[in-house]
Length: 128
Image (cartoon, rainbow, N blue to C red; front, side, top):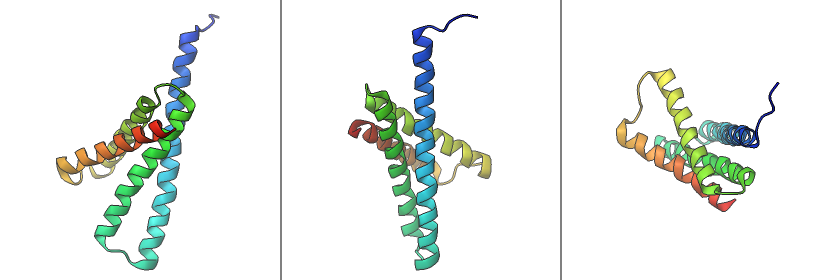
């Protein structure tokens, strides 16, 4: 059995960092979506406030994931945060395509969501 080189271990660590940061981001997303649902039920929010809440959830979740990735990486934190935000968006897009078989909101909405996710993750990485 061959021993793994130091670089292979480092590569595995990076993959684990990203997976952990994505898990963190999606846990935050789940908690915040539950809170938004509770607010929707109790306060009867209109569509504009729900849309704003969902947008805020994207930014807060990717910020948390980017922050976590930056804490784990300790170097080039903003890149790891950006990577987390981009992968968060990619997974979100795949889930949307899997459920609806189309992209909701048009191209400009998708671009805006991408920039919010990427920016939130990068900001989280920079702050860490």
